[in-house]
Every structure is written in structure tokens, then in C-alpha cells.
Length: 372
Image (cartoon, rainbow, N blue to C red):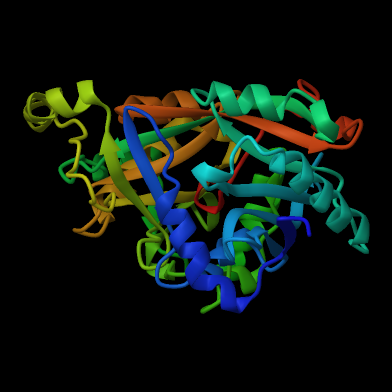
């Protein structure tokens, strides 16, 4: 009997999957655990309506020792919608590593891909820039692994909330009215036309904003901000807190960070920086979702970010926004951000990828950071 078996997870696996997520933190100077409480499968709504959870079962220990997700949705490539996949949530229990399970897992993924009646053009995935071991292994092409094609770098910026940031005078100078959307369908039209100019921007519809299973679970229309010039929308973004169903928890600090943490926190408190929370704390963060601005206007974008800071809930201490390296809005976000984390964006396929994804032809890339 083969000890390890790959298959799709079912509802009865929910508790075991949540336990595996809690037990496999991302190690580093600040170790983070990505929890899916109180329900693992319900948290996967952010991946879109078409997703599968792959598990590796240890039939001797009668336990799940590995998990990953495969999702597919329509993204814009060259301003045309196409089915593109995303690979995420890879976790392997420590005692099950170095057993050749990764290659076997990808063979199972290939079976799912081949069985899809509408297989995606390719898959996207991200690898933390500092995770050199995973990057070297996954991009090696050994043991039947698919090809990894480097596309860009995703910069996730941390923006501390500054409630006193002025916005009214800026809006007046720009002749720009800020406020929640009057009609969500109007926002969708703006996103699916202006946003579509960026490669891999998702094609959204009303179902993505509907509770309980829409992509933007927990995002109310009052948390969406639109900028208008006259009657036309020229910018949109939202504040999206996921802490009710997806949590990022500080699971530990490296020795040096732990030693210096009290001094670092005093300095951050004095300078308005980002303090390091206690081990076991849930990060009090929210995502900036679908930040789209007509003509990539930096003044309108800055105004949107400043207003989002003003309207952020009291239990949110900072905002997270992800922008790829060639996005013209990145420089503006960096002015307000204090820290950034970099991940490499890859297209994954068994063979060549679409020319629409090949840099530099692809132009500006986009990923919805809250859906990763």
C-alpha cells in the first residue's frame, strides 16, 4: 500500500486543514501563520467560484500532511478575458518533507488540469523573495515539475493608518468628489474597462460582491470609495478586512528581532511606524482592494489612499496594498508606506505560456492581493 495519497478534500477535512494551516507557519525574522478560522472551505471564497483543495493523506498516520489550492477565474489578457488559474496555499507538515511528495502533488495537479473541460491558459503563483529554498526547488524543472516563467515582482506595501491626513483641500484642487458608490454596477463597468488595461486584472461581476459566498466576502459598499470628476468615475478602491474568516497571526520572532522588539516598538511609536505585536496576535490589517485609477493619475491615487486611511475602521491599524514592479502607481503608494514585502510572480505551465503574458509585451501586471 502506498503510504501517501493525493486527492481532493471534502467537507469532513475542514478541521484537519485548519490544524495544518496553524502548524505550518512561514518562518523568518517574523514568523507568520495563515489561519482559516472558523471554516477552511468558507474562507476560500476569495479565490472565486471555481476552486479545488488538493490534500496529501498519510494513510499510516491517518492524517493530512499536505495541502494546496487550485483555482480558475477569468482574468484580462491584452484587454480580453481568458481563463487563468492560480496556485496557492501550499503547506506541507515538517515530518512529511523531503519525501518526493511535491513532484507527486504536481502530477495530481496535471491530472486535474487535463480533466478540466475548459483548462486554463496557465497558472499564476507567487513565491516570497526571501524563500530562496522554495524558489530554487519549484523553478528547477526537476522530477516532472512544470515550467515556472518569471513575470514580475509583487510589492506588498504596509500603510500605517494616519487619521489626521488632510484630504479635503486636495480634493478641491483636483475638482474631485469622493464618496461611496451610488451604483455598484457603475463601479464594475469602470473596473472591467480601466482595470482591464492591466494584465491579469480579474473580470468581476455582481456575484463577486454578494454574501455569503462572493469573492469579496465581508466587503460592504460603504467600504468602497470612488473618485469622480463630474459624473464620471476616475478612481475606485475599497477597504477589505478578512479577519472574520482569514487571519494572519504572529507565531514567533527570530532571536535578534525578539531581543530588539521593545526598542523597535518605542521607536515606531515615536515615528508613526509599524509596531511588532505580541506573539499570538492577529495582525490588525485590511487590504486595499481593486485600486484602479484612470490614466494611472498619481494625484487621484494618493487622494484615494488618504481617504481610505481616514475612513478605516478603528480596529484597523494599517492597510496592505499590492502593486507589481511595473505599475505606475507603485511610487505613489511607497510615499505613504513604511514597509514592503516582495514576492516573485510566476506563470506556471507544462510548456510555453501565452505571448500575452510574456514581459515586456504584457505591460503592467496586476494581482488582487487579498485573494492570494
